[in-house]
Structure formats: C-alpha cells, structure tokens
Length: 212
Image (cartoon, rainbow, N blue to C red; front, side, top):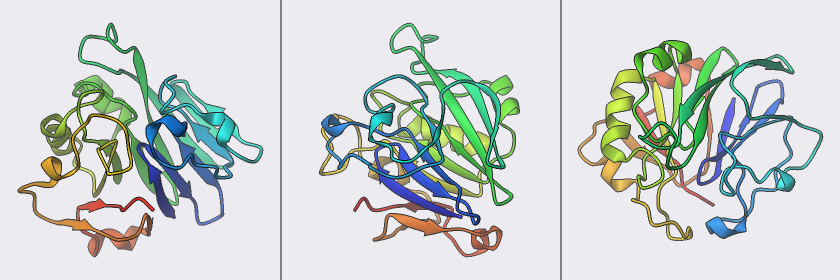
C-alpha cells in the first residue's frame, strides 16, 4: 500500500492491487495545489469546501460521504458519525470518520473531527493500524486533544494532517506542537510512504510527511 499526502486532509491511498482511494479533496482557496488525482473511491468527511471538492477528481469513481458499511472494489469501508465541533454539531455540523481495510491493514481518517471520540464511537471504529490525525486546532481537535485521542486509539502509525504549512491560508497550528516532547517521531522529505505489515517494525510511530 502507498499513502500519498496531497495537502490538508487529502490523501491518495493505493492498494497493492492498484485500487485508489482519495480522501477529502479541497479547492484552491486552501492554498495547496488542487489535487487532480485519478481515483476509484472518493470519501468526503463533510460538506465544506476544503474537504468536498470532488469536481477536481479524475476517473470513474464511487463517492462515499455517509456512515455505515461500504464495499467497493474489494475495499471494506466503514463510516462512523461524529461532529465537526465539541457542541454536538451546533457550531460546524457533522463529520464522518472513515476506516478503510487495505492490504490487511486498517486506516482511519478522522476528517474534521472536533471532539474526543466517545467509547461507543471508538468501539465502532475498532483497532486501527494507521491513523490520519488532525492536529491543527481551531476547526478540529487541537494538538492536546489529538495526543489524548492517539493514546486512546493506540494505532501502530500516526500521520498528522490538517495543520499549518507555509503554503496554506488557514489560521491553525503547525505540526510542531503535536510532536513536541514525543518519542519516535520522524519527518521525511517526501509526501509518500509505502507500507506493508512489516513496515511497522521499522517506521517511527509518528511520521510527518512533507507537502510537495
């Protein structure tokens, strides 16, 4: 499996058989180059411009934006209903957390999660191998809440997302506050990782990808 960070909360996940999953594509106002990737599956966590710009996606794809169980091209996908804020959605609405079973590994994309997950939600999601975790605050959980949630979920690998970089326009924190003081952190110069089940033995627990 390959995981490529295209900026913000947008990743291109490619299975060993070539099935491509694109998460939360964004428009040009975010500051990153608009992802124009081809995909077989597109998931959008909520209906905001920086997470639902599906018109940029190429190819014939299945768009999933709802909770429940889905199976597309052999990829098992689960959507779990959550909120975009800490007030039951009254400020910014709903959010869907997605998990994907790819090459025997479970990836969890938290979208614009705005609160610590409940025990019920954690039980629905289950054990996670790879966690795509928002850490920037303001519109999502902040670095403190992200650290708390990472401890509860205990994934084998954490890839931070939705944080401030030099090219983006949002007033949110960078990744530094989240990684500060943590063991087993690696920042790499590339925006893509190739992962097999054996990779977890050699990768740092937190890997910060570099936007290109």
